[in-house]
Image (tube, rainbow, N blue to C red):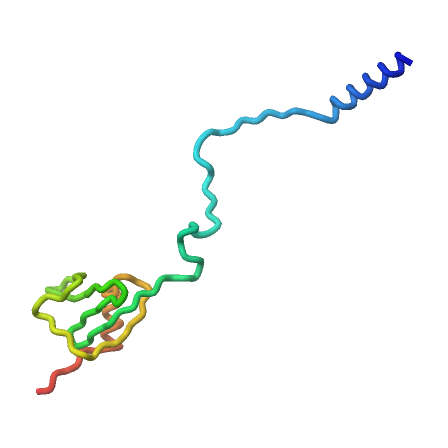
Length: 123
């Protein structure tokens, strides 16, 4: 009986050793790999872009960012951004609300000029 128990234990050890194996592999140290499956969590979802709302004054060609309280105006061939207008520019009551996907409305000024030309002053 003792021989049978030893034989069974030896058989189990041999069979158990062939079923299990240990593999070693190296792990590289460093930052985790980047996964670019979409925008970062703090960014807006795909297909959603921020919209900026402007009041455009055609008579003086000035943009006013409603949400940020900034004026965009042309002076001596350059565009400027300021929380207030220079003393020489006086706004009239007529304006158009524009919605754009940019924080720099002057990039599309030529298109805006075609759609909303400055008013001609009567002679």
